[in-house]
Image (cartoon, rainbow, N blue to C red):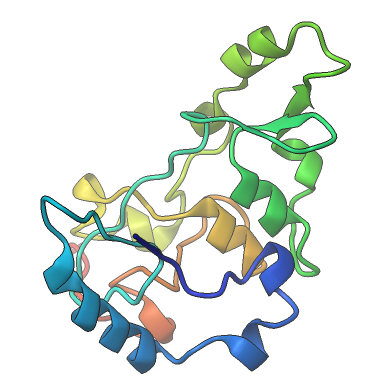
Length: 174
């Protein structure tokens, strides 16, 4: 079972304010469904509120591929969806590697793309001074893009240090 709140990117960008549920509501869903996660049912909570202060998971861009109907191949569909939101500072073409119908070298293009070499995550003062940084995956760059940021910025929606613009955990002393 996959639990994912209404996305703030792609088709959800125009309706999220009208249809999305509150953080409290999403936390209640998490608490109600978490006990069912076990050997017979795998529950994946994607982008539900991080109220427990855990470090963020890492980005999987580049480990799987996605092919759009017209043949465009991307290292992550969410990066493309996020780049197409009105406030994005990134172009969707940054994440489209090629087209399976027109690019005979698509496998080589995928092998050479190296998302995490092109776009290092957590390149900001908050991540650089955070005690959780060594064990943190820095969250989802697509969420950062959809919120109008640049890859490398803090995933403030999920970061336990900066949720709602407030520092919740101490930083490494200077």
